[in-house]
Image (tube, rainbow over all chains, first blue to last red; front, top):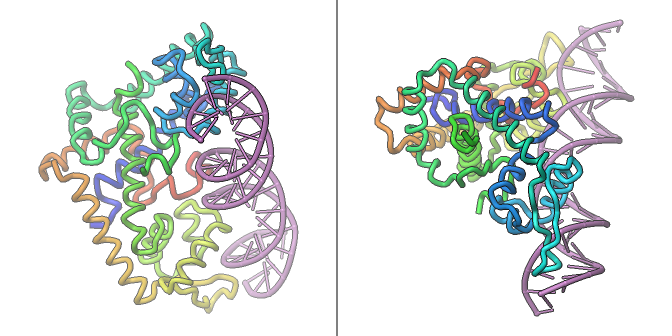
Length: 156
Length: 156
DNA sequence: TATTGTTATACTCTATAACTATA
DNA sequence: TATAGTTATAGAGTATAACAATA
């Protein structure tokens, strides 16, 4: 009866501590979750402009600047000139960026293993299956964590 | 492999949209989630001092002030004098606060129903059971949503 | 005239620390 | 000397709007 008991409240609580824990795991690599989000998507769409990427991730242009700034400062991403449009900057992963991404994937896999430590593989699959059947699961954008992007944009 | 696929990422995404949706459902009642959190706990521990409640909810004293202010302005909670300690204020629900709480519970129940619309009661129970078996579920404080309280305190 | 990236600005949220009145 | 509540202040994070270069 009380909201402390339901599926919604439980997932909401768990989501918070899970993402907080992931943030902690990422910290030793000197990476914040939203930097990780962008880094990952740069890898998947190399040569994209900042705003094209920002649109896909629902991150406003002005925010993309500082995120890409930080990634570039760390030598993980490069802003290259775009030959066909001198306004736009083509984003590319550096070799160091690629190595970093590999490291973060290991962290993510270990995180997942720790979370599901007490579940058999079959149970884990069943869990994913049921989570995907929750109504609100349909409005998720694959691979994009809404908490790391604009709240306004996410609501629209 | 990619973090977009795992249980952790999925719960983290879902938690965000679920709590965002609950916030939207609460909005027509003129209540924000953290006001709801405090209101609910005042009901469970009537006569508590602000700081006693804040300690249980991991909300720092200075923040409690404005939350209780807003609840008092709306006539949902009363600060009464404490006969044994004139520094402390005893928090009590008003009749209007009690009615509001009943309304929010209806909202919460409807929210839960909507989320789990495509699950049978048995599946829903199974889902709760598996969520509770996730490692990080052990560090949850019952009934307290960490996102609405101090991040620092939650980490400690 | 529209668009890319950038900068400037303002706003929200929150914690820390000072302050008062009691204890 | 310590504690309850309050107020003041400062910091982080973020969006909106103005701006310069280019289309």
